[in-house]
Each structure stands twice: as C-alpha cells, then as structure tokens.
Image 1 (cartoon, one colour):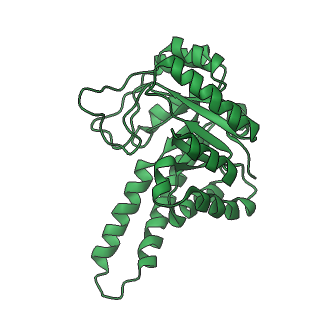
Image 2 (image 1 turned 60 degrees about the vertical axis):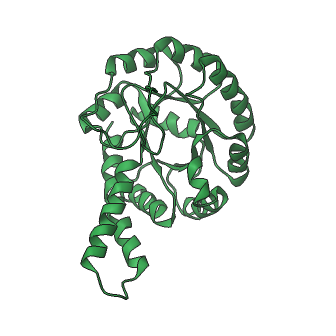
Length: 281
C-alpha cells in the first residue's frame, strides 16, 4: 500500500511508534528490507539516496520498488534521501517517489526555509511529502566533516521557525546523532529533543541511527521521534557477510548470486531487529 511520508508518520503518531527508513541501492538491499517488513508486519520507508543515482538510476529503483509495493498490503513509502539538486527531485517525483528529503541543513536558516518552501510546493503538488533538516551533521556517506567544520545541534528556536514557515511535513534534527560508524558511544541530547518536540507540530526524524543503543532509541521514540534512518549497520553487515562467504568459498566457480544472497539474508536479520524495536508502542 503506497502512501506518502505524512500519511505513514500519522500512523506512527497514532501508535506512538517510529517507522524505520532503510536505505536501498540494489535488488538485494530492497529484498532485505521488504522481507523484513513482511516478516514483522511493519510499515516501512524505503530510502534511496540522491548520491546512489550514479550507481543505479533512480527511475530503475522506482520501477523495481513498484513491483514489491504492488504485491504488498503494508504501508510503504518510497523516499528520496538527502537531495540537494532540484533536477533530481523533479525526476524522482516523475518516477513515482512519494517522499522527498530536501537537505538544506548547511545553508543559513532563512535560505533553508526559502528553498524548502519552494520544494514543498512542488512536492505537495505531486501528492508527495517533504522532509527537511536543521542542524548540520557529517556527510551522509559517513565521512568526517572537513577540517575546521563542526556539526551543529538543532536549536529549539530554529526548529520552531522552520516548522512554521518551510511547509515541510517532517523535520530531521541533530541532537548528537551522526552518519556512519560512531567512534565512541553515541550520546543524544534528549532534553533538547523534548524541547523541540514541544515547540513544533510536525513529526521529528532521527538520522544516523545505526549504532545508537536500543535504550536511547526507545527514549527518543517516547519523546517524539517518528522516523528513524538506518543504513550503516545494514550495509556493513552485507559487506562482512560477503567477505566471510568468499573466504569460505575459494573455488573458481563460486557464483556471484550466491554471495549476494548470503549478504541479503543477514541484512534482513538486521532490518528485522530494528523494525521489532521501532514497533514497540
């Protein structure tokens, strides 16, 4: 059952849960996410990053996703993640994406609001939803910030102003979360989250959630997080499994599809574990 982000997050709010947003970049990753969704009965956001377009055209991913969505009764969203290029956004909407994240987080607040408002008008005109972001994190591929550049937490005042003026349907915030692999134990500013949640009227999103302890994620959900992005742990599990499979199968006729199927199986287990966590009301 294909829907937009606003609709699926309304379901999450009603149940006081979070919906997992899982990145996909090929057939194995989308099958891992969809298998986990059906195994757990979970509403699911399938997320395709703008940066993946150079590996697989977003139109191809949309066509692939359409097959799985048409054969599912679960609430599903096809989401374009961390998009900064308006041409990519237009292509995604034309291809059938039902949710767009416009990432203007590196811009000054007023510029971010102005750009987001424009994108919101386009997106809403196509029946899709918009996610915005405030507070600058490291790049979505997990690389560190450039020398001299620091991530910044989302402030309550900025979140209030953005939510009133930008026209976004959800807001991703920075409260200590980061993309990629954490160097130490993650620490989330839960008091800041609580204050932001009380100040805005749109659902809140947590990016960079791989590696955050379950107890912290549960507290974040209790304090208003309704969409949680997971990528790194699923991806690294696939790579680890492929390495182990190849180390154990050194024969010359080892089949590539056997490698990817082994990775998919383990990726499915990781996605399932997160879905079960997010589903707890």
